Length: 77
Image (cartoon, rainbow, N blue to C red):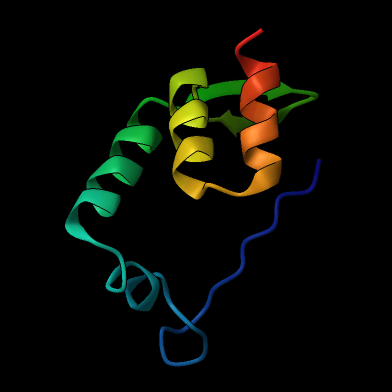
């Protein structure tokens, strides 16, 4: 399996800082907590990160989108 690494300059692209600075303190803390609780699996030699079920439910509730609210009904079954 070939591994690729992309090196970018903060001057060249939109960076994470400019995204996260627009978020509230609580949104940033929630994102850090969700990342900390992530579930990592290796499938076919590829590391894949999954959000935990509780965090997924919180995110779908917070979004308020019709599709996410419908997903919530199915998740809670």
